[in-house]
Image 1 (cartoon, rainbow, N blue to C red):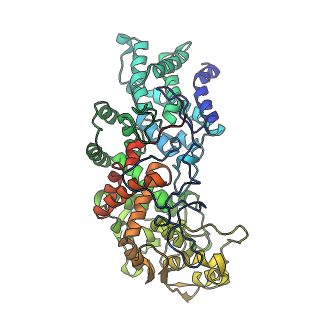
Image 2 (cartoon, rainbow, N blue to C red):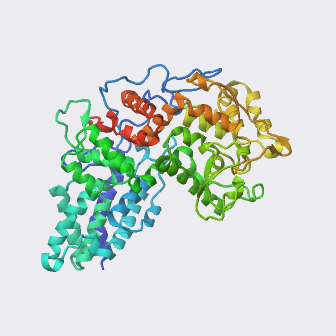
Image 3 (spheres, rainbow, N blue to C red):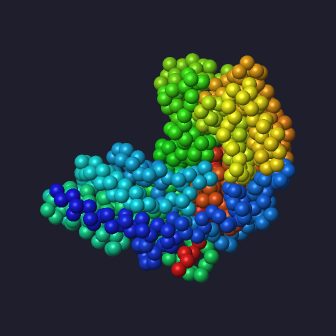
Length: 593
């Protein structure tokens, strides 16, 4: 073996990606060779998107109490109306670690543990797939080489399966390699290979085979494909029929790619690519039918639950810490059980239950394993999550009272009315609260400073000014969660003092949400009946699906998505399908030259 020589042919594309990572423009030509563009136009910042974090130029929304600190979708300078007349420029989308692993697994049929060595994807607006921050650093370039080597080496251990059983004795090694370049290249690049693609792949094969073997040639070809910009990025380079058109229809292969990453978080399989090649994705009705069929595939469960884990924050369970002196029941086993419960619940609602948002928010059930049973006050010996009805006295309601959610929305040593209230305000109501001033100490109050969290956090209301204006939008919601401690265990007292579960919502755009309530169950009932919450959930799905926040041109697409979700009665499966019916899914903006 000559490792240095083997390294060279496939190292160059990865380094090119790292060097071009800020260009923001897809290179010319039919193959789109100049690919990277992670900080291109369309990144969040100066757009008038409906709810754009703390962006200073975002649309003003509901009039928050006092200083009016809430921004939202219903303010001045609203999103564009139908019909769509322009598309939002979107930075080029690099595969996330999750998408890379899923795609490599489907392509190669190997254990994708090596993908864990890739750098973590940055989280923006709660999601780690925002194209604007999916840059490629020099560390990425290095790791892409090493990961591709490990995956390719594992793949050629089952060479016959990898190459489709091509008989090198009767066909010849080079002919089998060309056949593999065509078939594997199509799957890896998510479209038919071009002559340039084939030349690149065969050059890698020749470099590996020279002085080596047929298997080594195939191995280096796989490495080359996995390091190519055409694999690492979701390139959309089809030339528009009208170069000056503000809306560029994407090709059916590009549509198949969008559809596959939307529902499977992975590249399209041969069947979906074949459908694109036959022109079967030409109209929205056909794509909706295909989307429903894809949702029935087991691959959809892993992909769709990733959205819920990120939206709820339960994707952070791996980095969560708890004080074991204050919470002796907490352990790694409990954490792992928490990691399993939310996906199991989501799968039940979307694939076995009634698919409804109202069930997600209000169901008095949970998926409990033996490690988690003491937290819920139930009994089971099962090591895997089992659906259980929870004690009525605890007044639990859907995702908002799951131990996984409650634990991540809390501090290591105590609950956090701020974090829990902020989640409801920002992720269920789509209203944002500006970050605290730089000179404000945001350290949580000491647990010993007052008996209950309500007592400890009352200082926010007494602080006056901007602190009070912001915190009255979060804390009164969060106080209703106080019957559940920092690991999600039910309680009625804290430090010997009776817990007050009174809550209040101010400044909601849906006025039916405003007013007082007691406990999370009453809160969940209000949220489940709210148009604002239903539209917000659709907005969250839009952001996750497009890999960016909404901007002015997205108004018609967002309205289409929200209206379809409402017409379905809040069907979460149909929400996935509805995204495929939007103009944002079918068109892209023209590339700047």
